[in-house]
Image (cartoon, rainbow, N blue to C red):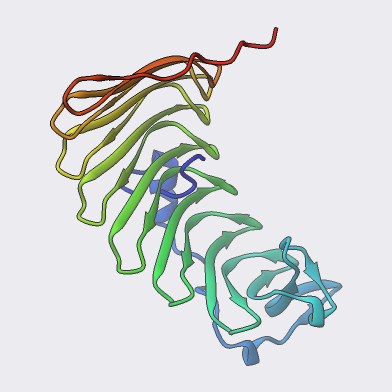
Length: 245
């Protein structure tokens, strides 16, 4: 499963330029402030809107899952959007909008209120380093994204801060060698990918560096492999099933 999840060291020039600009309104977090005004047939000012589980605005509040506090300028979203869970009233997401498009740093939160993820957004698309955090605040992962697709090396970490995995992406697909490490820093696994599928020889290692196993994959299908005990003795395994042509 792709690290969604999951994860802003550096920004593109466009995002950096935008971040220096002040949004027209920082928004509001009190539902009582919403006026839901219409001016010349257009939404204006502070609104409270209700959404279903698919994020679609609905009028039937009994079937709503979320409510959002938003700012409209002449019918266009323009300010910070705060999204709350109706069941418990907790804040789940903050998203800055400018002239109808999301631009800036989106933040998502755990039920505890702790920061879960930050996503740099340019014109409704993720652009920059997406970061994910544990509930206790440790950085768990960071993924470089361009126009909504992973591009570059995504990194995941142990709670100690040590590198756990690094996965190369090109245009949203895993391409290259994915590497996983023991918390002590030794290589645990290296897996070759082409076009988001395992292709080639995947190798796994014991923490002392000895080879634990080697498996050959073609288009994500396991073809053959050899596996070893820590003492180097080969583990006998049955031959792979025939490939359907």
